[in-house]
Amino acid sequence: MRLVKNKIEHNGSGSVTLIPEEPEDMWHAYNLICPGDLLYASAIRRVTTTGATGATSSSRVRLTLEIRVKNLDFDPQNSQLHVSGQIVNETQHTKIGQHHTLDLELNRQFTLEKGSGADDDGTGWDSVAVEALKDAVDEGGNRRAEAVAVIMQEGIAHICFIGQFRTILKQKVEMSVPRKRQGGGGDHDKGMSKFYQVTLDTLLRHMEFNTSLTSMTNDAVRPVLLASPGLVVVHSASGYLHSLTEVLQSPTVKAMLSDTKHARETKLMDEFEEQLRKETNRATYGPREVESAVDQGAVGRGGGVLIISNRLFRSQDVTERKRWVSLVDRVRDVEGGEVRVLSSEHEKDDMDSDSGQ
Image 1 (spheres, rainbow, N blue to C red):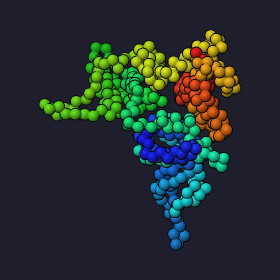
Image 2 (spheres, helix red, strand yellow; image 1 turned 120 degrees about the vertical axis):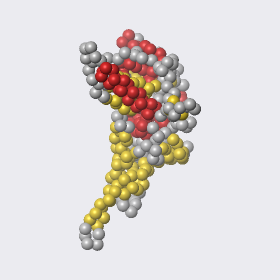
Image 3 (tube, rainbow, N blue to C red; image 1 turned 90 degrees about the vertical axis):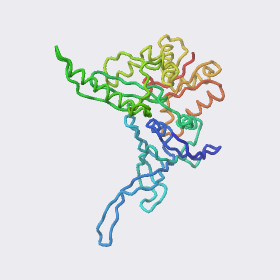
Image 4 (cartoon, helix red, strand yellow; image 1 turned 180 degrees about the horizontal axis):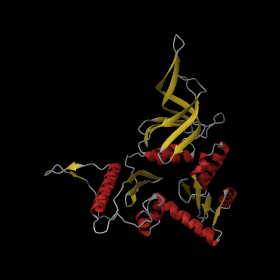
């Protein structure tokens, strides 16, 4: 995500202008935008006009609208974000109070404004929102997938990019491969070679490799390292997408991804669940139980870790969101403890918990 303009005030009000550049950026936008916020973006709206004779005609017009956000609909498979709400700026084609759904698009900027104060419906740019903004913005323009996985079997391949915050299915490759016949596997071998070539070409296209020409020939040279420490081959039960979980649990892959955000989250949740199984009283979960543990100094001074799901910060109840933001601020700023905000898409993120190790 590219930050175009930052106008956040010290009191927590203000706006930012952003440009989503990667599919993962739509997920970041989903985490930034909350009900009650103001969203300013380009839109296409169907407009009906009535002529002098009474005849009506309709056309699609591109205009810029500002809405007060009510609901968000995020499609993780296609990385599409639809934000609905009431229009707050009057234009030639719209009136204040009308409903509209803004479809955020890649490489098209939008402005998000959050208010703060007794007369405002929003929660402002609190510490969690500011942290989410930092996670979203790729200041150096260098953010890339932490790993690329190709899950495949005969005739089927799934190309996935494992990012810092979520895993994206880039493309599914599916081809019909002739069966291997006794005494003659030529057609099968040719089919498999074509399948491998199509899979490789698709992978390279998504990885956006630059091609260069050799000085001796006109053949393109593709910089692919087929033998390197970063390339591992792991057995999976099938070439379908659900096998990615099995691959990520492989000791070889775990070692390679040990420094990634996904691996750190997985390790933390594994440790937490182990403490629960052993009944060591060093782990607890549930809203009241976690707040009680913080009150007793189990996090921060006690050396524990607060693990909290980011879905709690998406609550449409402003009081509920402020409750959890306050807890995060207390642990981080007052108690001096560690806070881990886990993605709601994390495969093991099924409870909100506090774990003291």
